[in-house]
Length: 492
Image 1 (cartoon, rainbow, N blue to C red):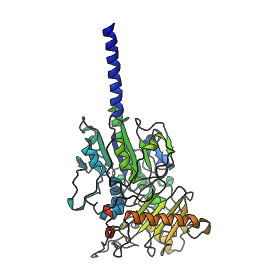
Image 2: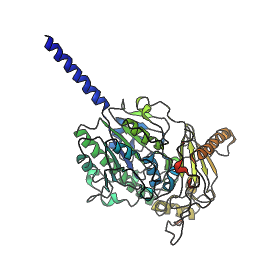
Image 3: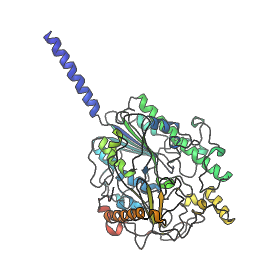
Image 4: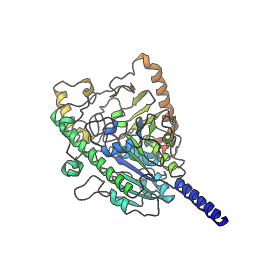
């Protein structure tokens, strides 16, 4: 009997040790990041035309953020900001498209790798480091993710899961080229994705012309979104089959808004708001949970590191979102700041969002805010140009070509498309002044600036054609103030 009691106690002890080990196990992490996808182009965010059943399923069994914002509506500045947990101007030259991150700054995948994670980036990279000075190696594997019949960056996502080391937790940055212009999914379409989208069923926003050309353009864009969704589903199925899904923290988002007029590169929601879905059965309790708390994508780095029990770098300016996993009504920040710098065209814009308002300040108000060059060359933009020539643009459509613009814009969050600028409305003067003061404080504390020799246009604003032989690069924002050495986050 004594031996039996000892055996029973030993079994209980081993069980408790096993439970503790399971609870202490570091989670796997995957960041799925789309390329040029607006926040409301997933089914779970209300778009009934774009098919995203696998993302919708993750949201239905996880956490769906309704008030998540990027720091830049521009590909590489946005991705660089996410990977460092810093504002674009605090990353150095990386605040502008195609330029590198300051070499002394930590990337969160580097910290995960140093803590024992196997790390891989598969698909679109678009991040670089200044002069090769990076002392860290962020990824064990870097793969373009293309394969026969699939140029979308996700052809080897499942292969990466299968071939990973089995003795380590993993972090995967799975980055699709969907839905960047070129629409190669139309050329590479496979029946396994379902039917191609019918132009008759797309949702045409009020700032575009509702005609056959625009609808075909949007349908091709929807095809890219659906292909992105399909490959997310393939990875989820593989994780489930291997018994790893419950212990994998998944985030789904995009780097900026869709590549259409009045979206990508805009500080308005159509460019800067992002869908953000989190799925982690072991760490997020409840199903179909909606989180209305204000969050920024610079918060992902500290959140992922906290989940992995890895100390965040002192350079990171974001906040840990994990309190929202347990209590989605928690408040982790009161303000979200964003910026727009050079992306094909001279630009300097800043914005701050509170729970009720969006405030925008434009330091290049004399110029149109028509969107990037690939959008300017699009059928949707050409349709707007034709409508403009006939003098029949609506107020929403005319905003694409407005010049000069107002130096300040103020919108209620209830103004879905941000078409009613309240900056001159005395009823909202107090709130405008408050947000303007916060903007000044943020710019000062984070070392932001408006350089005199800011980068100039390198494409024609109406045709989208490259301007040859120009030296267009100038001083990047914050460069003259040493912003890469400043870690203060400003108001949060």
